Length: 265
Image 1 (cartoon, rainbow, N blue to C red):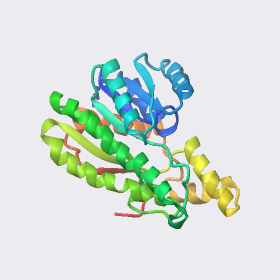
Image 2: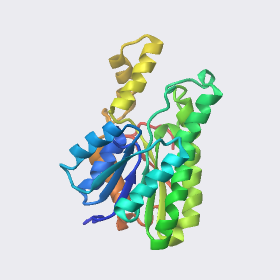
Image 3: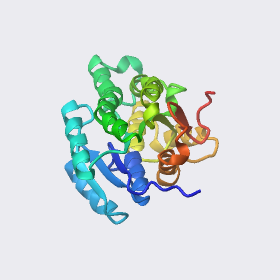
Image 4: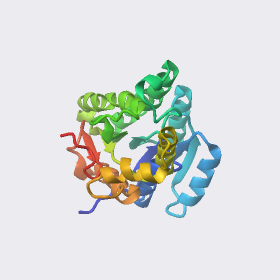
């Protein structure tokens, strides 16, 4: 199988570290043009310097996923620097309050999480779809979690506000399918990132237990294959495949990549 997506123009949000960074690097290795983003300019500059050792065609722009004007500027930059967008990967970090139980959250927490997870995806899709539709080709990915199928009490903000993305992808597949623009949700399992460890550290402090105990009990022991996923070689490769012409018939669905972690059918 010869997967060739070289030259495709890719925008990955929240991508200077962790999940987003690994996915951006996977596309860069395939010869794609890539724009990354973060709220932190210093992180963007550092990431670009490191990523250009993989491939030269990577640029970055500061963006806040909870600010619509900021997203407009991000997409405008990506369109200008790459002369278009073929692939959109909507990734996000965690809200400051997460992990948290339902009744620990204020309405301000719910509003922030909704902007971060749901409204950002709606806004970005509205900003890019017309270009994909005009060229009659595109891929849109919403990154979510296995916990959408099996909600976890400590991730109330994420599990509730990201759940509608599954319906959104299904609806958009009917709107955009005839233009060869595919929209899918990626339900991720556990990947060892600094962000994941920061979240679990907060939970460990809340319940008064060591992080290594919580990590083993809440993460590793829950995964049938006994390890976390590989961002670049497994998650990144999945998105590369889904962006190829081999995956043209995969549209409007949610795809689990969790090592068997979810017990939901």
